[in-house]
Image 1 (cartoon, helix red, strand yellow):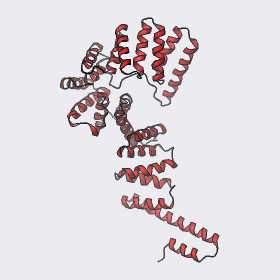
Image 2: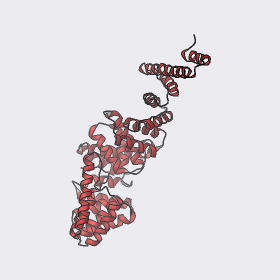
Image 3: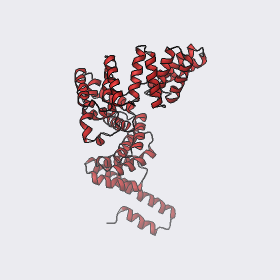
Image 4: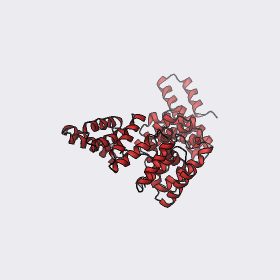
Length: 385
């Protein structure tokens, strides 16, 4: 029997009416697309995924802008671990639906699997910005992939923030142990890239961090001590333990930070944490020295300049303090603590207009935070108790 499309072409060839011929050709294409799309949906419903993929591809040849077909084809390809094909399909889908958070999510996850890490992180963050509706499982996957990529790109603080948020909703998640260990030890690796000789260290550190963030403090104490006893000379270990101790046992935290500097003489954040603690204890000379050393080691990091400014203001050198605060603001304009420091310093210097501008910035950042943004105070990524 002659198929519908073949029959329509045959009639078209015999027709002397060009308008009728054009209408018949369009009808044939429409029927063919409808048939293919129905068969593709039926195959997907019946879990005949290979057939569904083939049929969706055929239907999309007829109608390349079929959004639903692109979505289903992309998800099927991703489920079949055909990540490069899924990536290409979702890229096409996103040109049609740039407002679709789940689409950005699966595009980023596909790019993660094809090791296009900068693009993957960009698209995963776009998925979070657009939103994924009530797809909680997909949102957790996006958070996971984004967190491990942030660690790989040495954005440890942001990574740990995301991991802590995930732990608050799923405190039993064992998948977060290694990512937490990597972020806490500040190792720019993906979980799959952990060397064999470091895996036990990373896992033990991750278990300690997870225990502390889920308020299992006795377990956390035991595991942190075990990390330090087993790996006393590994860079980052004493810093991690010191950051954990600093709030409740500051003298012990100071001891661990000093041990970290023995292992890692150029460790910037150990100096930052020590400077912050010395400021709290009104040991302003010691705080200023450490902050200035940290600023020399990492001139573009905002926190050393901020702490140097706080120490200088406490010592009565307001002009020098303002210079440090302004440098720190230029390096990190989203840091609310810096704006508070500047507002107080401007007020002390009688610069009321400048102080008022800082107050406006603080209010703007507070509104952003209430709307789901992430203004920051200056904090390290290690767990606090």
